[in-house]
Length: 164
Image (tube, rainbow, N blue to C red; front, side):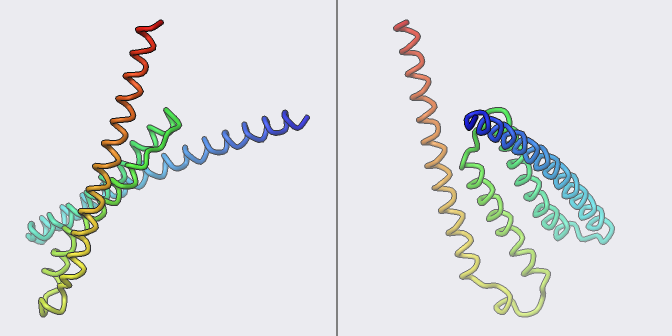
């Protein structure tokens, strides 16, 4: 009696989880379309105002958001297919966000006008660079350890096949 209730509860939770992931996938696709639209509008405005350098850098910042959404969509596809969600996705999203910030920050400074010393904060920029370095090292450590685990699994499968 209790086992059947637990089985029904688990299957209902799995079905609800699948619905949530479908909604998440739809939201990611819609967000990607909206950001691509924003990118297109930014490029057109830059061309209209004959301000290509500034417009290009602003549009590039928008493309970094598309890159982030693409990483999340790939992670969602992987999760739906395999049931595994890799930590490296969060590290990649953090790296992309930091890279975007490093590109957008100088654009904000240039467009703000006024006194450069009052707008530019070297500590903030230095912390962004340090954070990017830390996430880069973390990304390298995580991806190399995942490769090592994958290689170890492949090697043990080969050994089992050769024995059997």
